[in-house]
Image 1: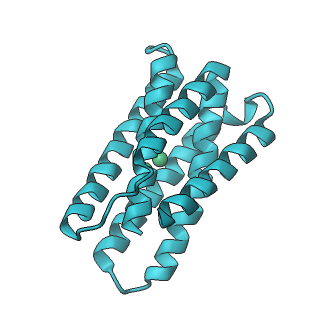
Image 2 (image 1 turned 30 degrees about the vertical axis):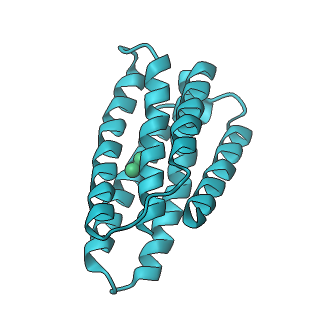
Length: 163
Ligand SMILES: [Fe+2]
Ligand SMILES: [Fe+2]
């Protein structure tokens, strides 16, 4: 669980880095995204610490998530500000389900990990809602775009669990 979560939070920081590299720094979307990116850095730092203290091996796919995350962020931001927000909308929809199923699986076995996951899940949901209320659903081809990103996200989760 820690391996896949660390990979996901790392990917999130790379997506936002790609978006912020493309978006004008003073546009409203960039300000929203910069704030969410700071929270992703915090999530990542926590999973990095858990990984060290519990001796978890990181995913071997980290170099791929570095490039793929940045590329996804940059590509969506190049489409439009709304498409950048739709990317967050799609990713956080999947992450909410992912963290929810981890919490179900953990039950009361690991309160330390569960409390981190529950806290981060609440922030991811807030990211999704922020993206939607800022115009994500106005992105061109919103249903197709978000479905494709969600499928990619599920694939990344599946791979990071195994490799
Ligand atoms: Fe996160
Ligand atoms: Fe997030």
